[in-house]
Each structure stands twice: as structure tokens, then as C-alpha cells.
Image (cartoon, rainbow, N blue to C red):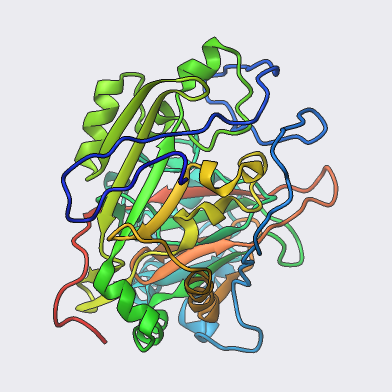
Amino acid sequence: MLSRLARQSRSSTKTLPFTCKASAFSANAQLQVEQARVQPFFDAARLSPTTDAQHTYKVIEPQFYMPGRLVMEPSEYTIDCGRFKAGTVNPDNDELRQEMERKFKEVGLVYLTNTGLTELQAMRRLVTILIPNEMNMEYKGGSNWRNYIEPNVYDTGAPKESYVHYHHEMAYIRTSPRALAFCAKEALPDGRGATYVSDQVQATKDLLSTPFGQKLKEKGICYVRCLTDEEHYRSLQQAEHDVYNHWQKSFGTQDPEEAAEIAQEKGLKIEWEMNHPRYGRYLKTRFYIDVYEYFPLLDKNLLFASVADHWMWFDTWPGVGLLSPEDRPLCITYGDDTHFSYDELQQFVDIYDKYGVAIPWNKGDIGVICNYRWAHGRPIYDLQDASEQRELGVILGQVFERQGQKEGKWF
């Protein structure tokens, strides 16, 4: 990111110029444009980037949980729907509805197993108990390359070959969802492809007891994103294997002025480089905010930032991971634009891992997560043969406006 941008302080209003090195990928692959195409990932057999694929730094690998550590009794958030009669696992089931509402209010997490459901829209109807249809959030301004897979349901937007570091959904803009849900249309055996969630009540208390946690409280954070130009890649038939997301995909428009308006509505400071040789009309954004977010239900500030928006997000990401850190499209700094040390990044990863809980998917399972109280992520997983599939639908809940931390609301 260092070569993609110049930094701006949290308190400053002066915009400094960006710079960016051209990507080292070749542009000889034919781009196929579809109505809702899948994000392309690097295929080593077809492309030979000139960048060195070997990391020159020690990669921090998330563990996602601490073996032997009981974060929370599974009975506090799990509902086994196998006890209900066939055909009654739906919003009309008062007993199920009341149990879902109670568990979500108490712990902010509901994990439904043995639902017998096979279609995403049937799962979506069940989720309406906690996330009504009229409260769906549109994934506009998002970082990941996500497509609708059914009405009101997105794909996860991340490759199986990559770690998905713990994160709170859309923490990098002014508006975030209060809750989100995952619906397992297809799942892998033996716990492979599990999602992990991290308890932010326990993590926040723990982190605030450390100098690093207090430093985060004092300095806040800046999220930096660099978004490429889809039209530029299409017109030059450039391979997209170095692309994380185009601004057109992120903001849902082909118009740069409309994209700028949406970005500013989301609280982002923006700058365009209109004629970048590799990336075209290149949009760079910054968002300054507190690391902790006030959660009204608990009347406390909770941890709401993670390393997921640092360039290390791409350490195992096909294609983008081959770029040097300073050329990757994401970065986080402290709110005064100073960088995190390696040890601080390790502490950031560890605090989430320490309070991680597995959600081992089976077909038809549903997880509903309070975006304040739980972060989510997953390890790398593999498909062992052509018959295996992992397909999760993602549903985003009602929007809330980020306000950051409140004085006097600490644990």
C-alpha cells in the first residue's frame, strides 16, 4: 500500500497525492464479461507474474480458536431443529421463534442445526425471525467481490485457498449491518469449511487490559482501500488476477461521480487517479474511525476492528497475494497514520483467536450473528473431489450508523 497512496492524518483535512506502482501481472488473458461473473483468481499454470511469489516477511497465520478453551457452552447458542416435526421448521413455529429470539438477545448468536431445509429461500424465510426482509442491507461500498446468488442472498466473495481473518462486517465504512446470517446450501464433511466466530465481549475485556488495547483506544484506526476500474480492464482485455474489487462492483454504478457520492455518504475520504496505466480510473478511499464501537444493548464499547483490512488479508489470496505488500489494495494504520508493528498485528490476531468458536456446517444449517458481539472468519479449506461443494448464502441485516466509542462505557 505504501506505493499506492500517500497518508492523511485523522484530524487533517488536507488531501495528499497518491502514487502507485504498476502491477507486475501480464495482460495477455482474454477477459470474459458476464452479467454476474465470478471473481477471477490467480492460476499459476496460466500466468507467470514477475513478482516474487515468496513472502519476504513472516506470515501471521490465524488459528481461529484455542484448543481446549471453552469460550461458551454450545447450548447457549445452538438449536437442534431435529426435535420439530417435518415441515414445521419455519417462521410460523412459535416455539422455535421464541427460542431464536431469546438466544439472540442473550448472546447474539443462533446456530440452527438439523433444519431439513435444502433451498436458500426456505432458509431465508427462517432467518426473517431475526432479520426481516425489509431490514436487508445492500452490500454497497463493500470490499469483497460479491454477487447475488438468490434474491436478498449474497455469496461469501472469498476464495477457499485464503484465510478469511476475523472481522466485523463492513467495519471500514460509516454504515454497517447490525446482524448477518449464513445459510449452508452445501457443506463439507468432517468440519472442513467451518466458519468461526469470536466473542467480542470477552475479547474486548481482555484487550483493554493490555497496553496495545489502550493504544487502540487512544489512536483509532484508518482503513485504506484502492479500487480498480472494471471498464479499463475490459477495454484493454487485461487479466483481472491482480484485482480485489473494482469500484463499479463495490459501489454498484458505472458513473464515477455517483461512486464518489456514495463513497462520501459512507464517510470515506476519496481521491481519483483518472489515468493509471494499469488500473484505469483508480479510486482510493480512507475512513477514519474509532477501533471500538458503542453497543447500545450492552451499553458498552466493543472491539470492532481487526487485521482483516490490512494488506496481510491477502497473504494467502490467489493472485493479489503475489503482489508485494506496498502494492496490495488494502491497508490499515492507526488514526494518526502511523503503522502497526509486527508484534501489534500478532496481538490483534491472537485476541480474536483466543475467543473463537467453530460453526461446523452441515447442509441446511443456519447461523445468525450479531455484528457487534461477534466477529467471523474461516480457515483455508479444500475440496477433495469433484462431488464436494461448500456454498453459503450471506444475508445482511438492518444498517446502523457508526458512532465509535463513548466515554464512560468501558468494561
